[in-house]
Image (cartoon, rainbow, N blue to C red):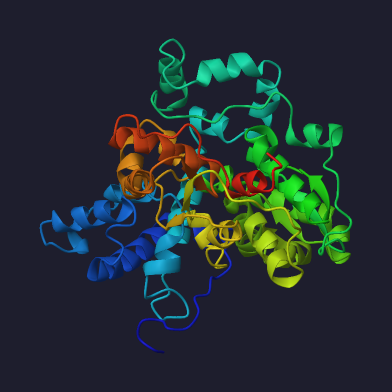
Length: 450
């Protein structure tokens, strides 16, 4: 075995059904084994707050080693992990197939699974993970819900903080009055049957965020695909389960994976790719679902068929060529490459996509925004989330100043985009951008579709 694990990293299936997986003694032994290796390496010190917390624990221990750290003090290290996968994908020299066999994020997931098995999740966390239910309720009175969750609402935000644990200053997504599926059914985009890629067909997996919250992303994607001749069908079976995975409810995710994969198997067997609109959801379908239910052939087939939306459009550009009509934008652009896009191991597809726009002035930022799903909006994490994401926000502020004139800030991750925009304002008054959309929304704008 070559030192540094120069081979391509691999991941083992998550053995969540085995009794040892949630056994406290076995987990503690593995935590100590992994933490001791991390302590001797420390390459990940600046990725997130988990590693500084771990190293501080050890450095403040009587022996300056892990042997005198109490196991009960490991919980803050676990809680600080956002499951971004960047330590596994970009930093750790000891991931499999190296003999040390380190997978820090999945070890944190194992700890959380044991916690969930023992006591479930707290009330606030449980409510936040119910994305489809929350959206259905919000759609009854979207204006009222969006008013109540609006940043700066001194009447309702303190109440959200006390009941759900959501920091009163965290910017929250709004709910659309009509779902993406309903919008698309009411007004489907006109397909350009003379486009070079007119022979292509695809299923577009809306994801809960594009279906319920930022429908503009899905509308832009569907319009771009139609302009390029793709016969695209929008689908939304259910949330992929990423919110549940973050908190260790692996069985819930497994049930979703089996159900959705079985439902989509006929279209997958017919050769249709499944296009996810949010990178976290693409990551779930491509990589996490097959690790959670490795024995399910439907899940394996869906995994092989899944593509990220930016990845799919770039593939059209490379193979058939794009339809005519792209025009230069009216400003420069900073694009944030989301962690879960990086974890898909597909390259900077969002940057490749935007470089297809004529005369684009593009700056790329490839670093964690600090948001981490629902992690960054919580009262206990909000300030740390902005500290972790400060380099991204600072780069966006600098890029806007250097470019002069109109400047767009975009991110593949919608929650990261909102977080970065808010972080820009925390760095410098007046620097906050009004919106940080998905790159496909700018691409649609360059086509004159938005």
